[in-house]
Image (cartoon, rainbow, N blue to C red; front, side, top):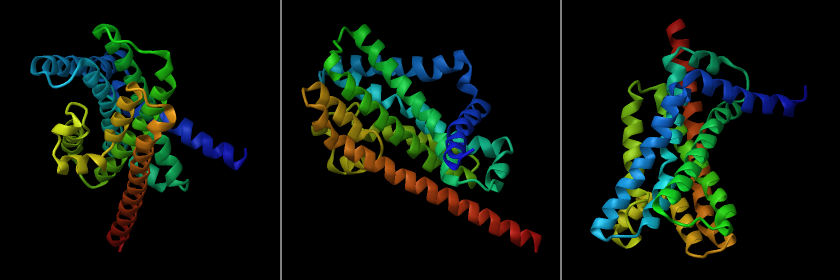
Length: 265
C-alpha cells in the first residue's frame, strides 16, 4: 500500500468511521429534525418577519438563511468531533497514534462539510419551492461553489472551537455562543446598510458572511468569476481557522503529554 493510499484511507475511511461512531444525529429522525426541519422553520420565521417589517424581500432571507443553516451541522459537528472523543474515552487513542495529526483531524472535518452541503441544498431547494421563488439553471454551478466553500469554512471554524474541548468540559456553551455569533454577525438577516461598522468587521473574520455576500451577488446577476471576489475571502477565513485548529490541537496535545510526564515523575 503506497503512502498516498494510506493517507487517503486515514482521511476518508477514518473520518467516516469516527462520524458514524460519535454522532447521535446519524439516526434518520434525529438527522431530519435537527439538521433539516429546524433550519427550514428558521427561514420561514425570518421571511415573515421581513415581510411584516418591510426590511427585505423573501429571496434575501432565503439566501442568507440557506447558507446559515450549515452552521448547525458544521459548528456543532466540528466541536463534537473532538469533544465526543474525550467524552467516550477515545481521545487518548487518537493522541497516541503515530499518524499525521493533519490527516486525522482533517478526516474528522470532511463528513461535516458534506453534511453542511446537503443541508444547504435542501434549504435552497425546498425553500424556493415553498416560497415560490425561481432557481434558474444558470446559477447552479456558482451555487455549488458557494455551498462547498461555506461548509468548509464553517466546519473548520467548528474544529477550531472543538480544540478547546480538550481543556473545557462544557462545550455546549461554546457551540451555542458560536451559533449566536453567526446568527448576529453573518449578515444573513440584516441588510449591509443596517449593520454597524464594528459588526461588519467582526463578521468579516467569522465564517459565512463572505459566502452569503457571494450568493446574493450571484442571484443579482454576477458571474461565477465575479463572485470569487467574496468567495476568495471566505476561503482565506477557512484557511485561517484550519491553521488555528491545527495549532490549538497540537498545543493542547503537547501540554497533555507534558503534564502526563510530570505526573509520572
